[in-house]
Length: 137
Image 1 (tube, rainbow, N blue to C red):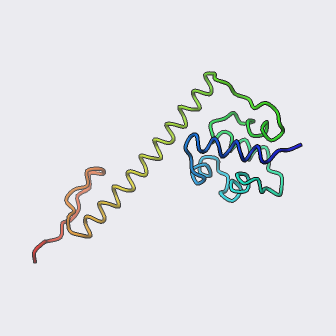
Image 2: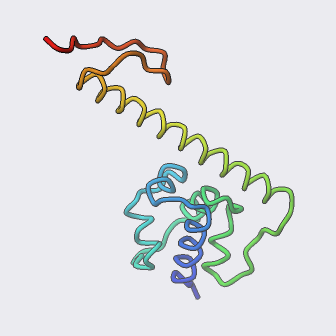
Image 3: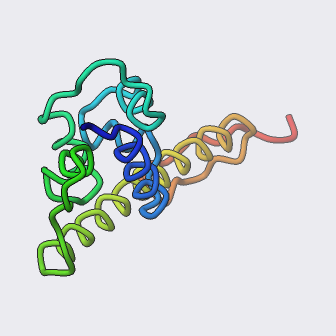
């Protein structure tokens, strides 16, 4: 018997543990947000392919057959071995990359605002020089 609620619980717990948003999981797994939502709320009315569950498992740092095992009530593969530590490191590095991109996006937004209000000198994050608007005219 398939236990979609167990899959939902495993996914939600892991996303909280990492922490990872639904959008981040969609990007990492290449699975649509709509499909993830159905799985996270156990509202899937149709079967999901083993490939979908494998992609989500891997994006969450688990072996590819982890969620399939959860679904069927088998003991999920894994343990505290070297592979799990490598997966954890990969997730940390991926999260750092995401944070770096977000900081860069925010720095660019601050630069645009500064130029708009006439305080743009130089963007230290990208090395670009902004035109400064004259003040007091």
